[in-house]
Length: 379
Ligand code: GAL
Image (cartoon, rainbow, N blue to C red; front, side, top):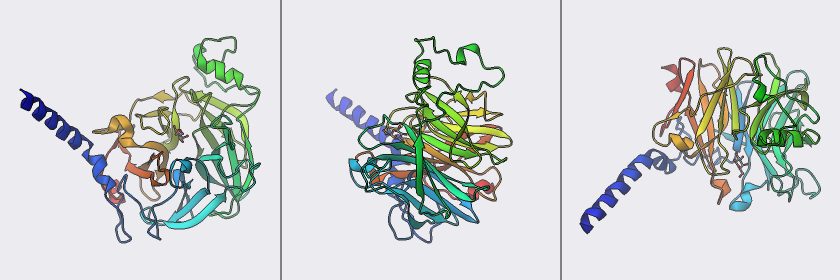
């Protein structure tokens, strides 16, 4: 009897290990200079053989080159705060990355908004055609204030790789009410007399200082209009806000998306005129299930579609959290889901999980692959 229990226990452990295998196996892999593949979750050496240090990142394609901007993290738990700045890498093929150095440096002045030890997360860089400036947006938390500042930070540069000059930080759209697309149900309009709904409560509380900005991305549409997409209202609700012509501020027009459902890590893309948004739940550094939405207009209404991931590990986004979706240049319907596998106890060791998005009609699916390359999109 005792042996049977032990054997059953061992068997269930073996089955559990087999279920986790796709994710664990990848951890041991590395890429080398001659190798043109992605290894989700593996150490990813740059041109100097050093693991790429660009977490919570985003990409920009400019004049035949991809630029990857992300949080530079250092060892240990301290690495979760900004000790160095925003790191930039460049690549022609998406597999091999050249270290371009620190694009935006933290300041040694403890009174600066971007003082060493502040929190600078999820940087996204866009190019403004009108001003010819590169504009970096990031989630900023002031030194010593935990996550309570909830600001958008802006820096600009004339050169894509930097150095970026810090410009300003702000809360979003102070004093403004949301825009309501036609057909918005009554219960989704803001009612500051309602003290029951938490989402209304935080929205109305922040009307005067401006809405909170935490996990965020920036999306540039085909017509050159850009949008700031961010977790707001104590992370209860996403907001999508229109940027001004030079991309350094907001116009005051914004919508609230998936009110009260705590969506983080937004990433947007557009395919065949339809807007797609991926995001995560809200569990700090710990992974949770991804979620996706579509809309025919950036202003919504946005439809929630559940978890886009499939197969073993799908319920935890294969241990990752979305940060960006990259449209691959020169390939049709080729979009890469980019996520971070956070290592909060040793931040510098955070891994990158890039997986292809599969379309089934207008639906999307993301499945785990140990190893893949861009030829997958040619099939
Ligand atoms: C995550 C968020 C990260 C970081 C972290 C801090 O949910 O996506 O960007 O802010 O929380 O705990």
